[in-house]
Length: 279
Image (cartoon, rainbow, N blue to C red; front, top):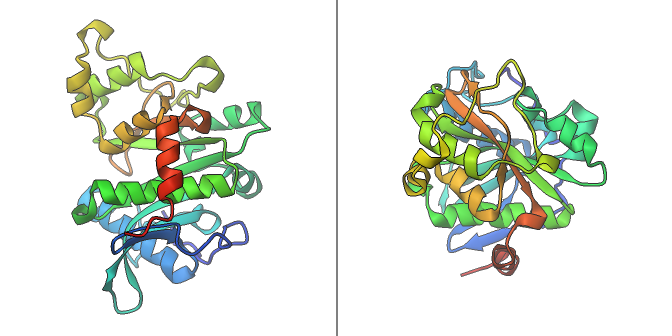
């Protein structure tokens, strides 16, 4: 990941309301300035490189930055009770890229691992949103922070009339067999239907059906599942065909596909009613 210009581009969406959700001292909003995007990149560096041991090249300023950052929107969670030397404390972030932006600026990040472009091309009437670079500081990994991130995502989806969310989600480690049970559970129970299916690129494809269906204990498999993936599944997400090992980030990735129409009514009602909750 090389140094890049972090100046917000005309493709980003600063016209949304400043605060998309708030719970207590925590609030979620979109990055509006270069300084906020840099802070998100620094947070990602702390989590991906310092904590989780990513080995890709990073900038001298200790930022996780790539060519996609300037054209993406960046969702930020702040703890407003902590004021840093220059601005409020960012404790969580998500990176968002809409299909119309990807079309104009060189494609999706996920296209380096999966055949997502073929799915987008097959459904030209739909608005796609790529979710990526999700991370939260360890001390803020709670239901409250996750709820705030999803309040922000849902407000963003409503504003831009998003039909489909997708993105890579990760298991820590580069040996798929170490995650044989949850990967097999996803393969046997959560695979995308043919009209939504996306496959890992042939040169990167790792099979997920490592354990026969009858040998998979669902409770044990779900217990071993990363919380982010479990959260997607609760919302109704499907899983693409094949895993991909990302050696730079030290992860085994799967592709999440979440048509908005599959999100259950109770979750939709929850995020609509709470998208700007103040308590």
